[in-house]
Image (cartoon, rainbow, N blue to C red; front, side):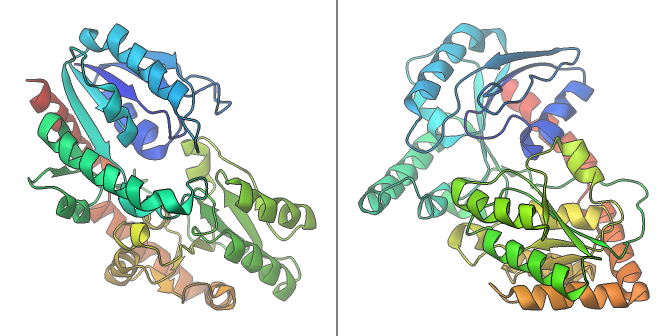
Amino acid sequence: MRVLVITTVHDPRDSRIFARQLRSMLEAGWQVTYAASFHDHATPPPTAPELATVDVPRAHGRHRVAAWRAVRTVLRDHGSAHDVVLLHDPELLLALPGLRLPAVVWDVHEDTAAAIAHKPWLPVPLRRPVVSGVSWLERWAERRVHLLLAETSYQERFGRPHLVVPNTVRVPAEVRPPGDDTVVYVGSLSRVRGAAELVQVGRLLHERTAGDVRLHVIGPADDAAERLLVPAHEAGWLQWAGRLPADEAMAALDGALAGLSLLHDVPNYRRSMPTKVAEYLAHGVPAVTTPLPLAVDLVEQAGAGVVVPFGDAVAAVDAVLRLREDRDLRNRVGAAGHAYAATHLDWTVKAEEFLSELQRVAR
């Protein structure tokens, strides 16, 4: 199998694209061409047998035309040499018309229309027309390409059933018990992802434990979040590492006291499982999460975390300190999360279904 994978929006090291899907294709012995914005994300292109890379401009904010043109060129020059084209950004669908291509698959990562409402670069008067345009594009895509969905709830936006490939994670066979001095956050950072609350949590933990408990924040930040995180990092309230390769980020979870997911109550998150929560459970780390429906279902079914109110940094800190004070509790919660993840959230189980679907559409 030969697969052309393209993204201009996501970081080339995106966990779903690179650490799970692309890695599984390479492990299966497939030939993969990976077109992504390596230079613009300051990321060296990965090297591996059977992997070729193509650098394309990054699409961000209102700067998307150059990326679209580059993808159009990549599709024209490389598409016919592959069995499947796997697209990860909805706007890349607009590069397809007029080209002779093999089977095309669009991996639907999020509720794009719902996410548009929180894009600071999009003027408010344009949001409704853009949402309508996104809905039209989704209907157009369903008639012309194959779809993979990251969440079961996304099925409601489409007229036909499509395979759901959820954001499950690679679950280690063994994990360390939770420790008592490090709290972690792994994921992108923005206002609606709880950046301000993370800064408050870091400050409160620092004050209430005399610096004995540290908040370790891993992930890229938008401009507004960066303006909050840099002073907090310099003040010693938290340690912000920026984006790390997936393996390093996951290694940082081992032995953590708790993992935070303080997402806000916005439409895009109400319908999605926060991948970070699944990652915490997979590594035996108790999760502290806001009450988004799918996150609540996960931690309650697994018995693996604590739910705190939206926007309440004090409640999050209280939950962390309760875990710190009760070793038996955190060990029990961490072990329950790891056991649940091994049974229900292991990517190695879902990978076979993902690979089989690409083979099916190629045929």
